[in-house]
Image 1: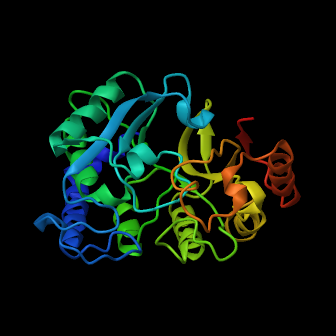
Image 2: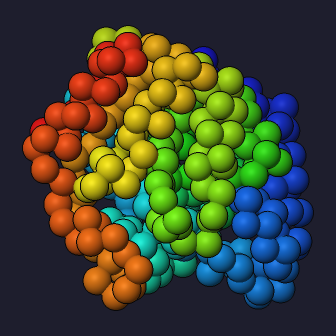
Length: 308
């Protein structure tokens, strides 16, 4: 597995996937919004992104799950904008306000190689779905420069991703580690604005990515392949924690690596929208977090960690 990307490059598979992904941009259906805009012509849809790579930062990151961080960090590249519009977005400066700068495909490949040379254990792409075509092109370029470095097959697709079936198919066999976000928004409020069927889409994406990469495999403390699921606990039970955990236990696997996260902060639009439940303007309580952990155990989910 460690030398898979050079083989896929040599066989032309990565380039073909990149070309196929780029064709989608002319009538964009990369994610379930299916905006049908012509992004190479300068049109933008829900993600507010054309066909140019925009990133906000890149560096070795030590704040991820332990199997990703290891001893030398996770090679984390934050992409600007997002195909979700969560009213409580914890990273709104980047995802909603567009903070970042444009880079060429060759530059992204160079960034990947430079961080890899520093010893990072994996490539960690944050909010990548809407920029998949250029990411694939950059991966192909980086894999073609294997004489400079042994380039491992450890591509991490991270939390918050919502992609269409064609996009998921394009990434099959190219993704070793998948880190997904899970939230089951309750009540009439669409917490991920513009995505009224987010829960169904989330379940579809979790099921498909679990089919592709299965449960996580960890050797010497480092994730080599498999799925990590993040669940951000929201105040007032608004994350639908029990529904999400029941789905993971019943439909995916009791061996799922689950990160139950307590760091919700009232942010972005929660102070501006009148219909927002008052609970979203509060931090979660210790009791709410403990209840989430207890629910996970009740459903037989014991693999993973929490960071409180």
